[in-house]
Length: 266
Image (cartoon, rainbow, N blue to C red; front, side, top):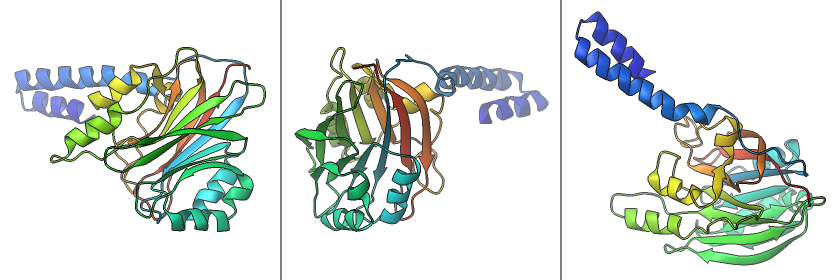
């Protein structure tokens, strides 16, 4: 939009070369962004799986709001990042473990923990030990009428001019999608679809749920004025996406991401 306005201003000022350059740049950018607002992908006929994720911001996010969104959206799987010991206790006190009684947790006294809460039985299958201390737990969730779904919690290092090597390395630790598998990478990637490192991850058999639902321009950070999408639900490519939303949660600088997924039949 800014490029188009710049082109109009340049034309009005009769600076035609600048106007033409601005217009071409705006059209090129629009062509790149257009697929993110057009829904697409497969439409399997198996069960739905309702997935939600939120960065708890060192465990300080409003746990009551998190639990209420789980109730309101009928969530099947919740993935949380920055899960501290205290946050786990508070989530339990607010009733989350009654709603989602199955869990695989890697809690931490700092901001390095993650957790997977599920309405359906799950089996913990491993943990990625991030190079900077993050613990990214993985579990296999049973889904009635569908195949089991492997869920990998994600919390990569944040980019920093002094630590961009760590940021790239933690993204490169994420697994490729298995051919024919039903798998999810869910959480805070600290990267948007405009980052080449995330596009490299996606190229290994994944798709971004928001992108597939036509909601690919919805930002998740910073929470008050979200301009970039750092939080994602990545799906293996045979999984369909019916809907995605983002929600504001008090006490955290990230917005919550919610996705309704369509699985192949079991």
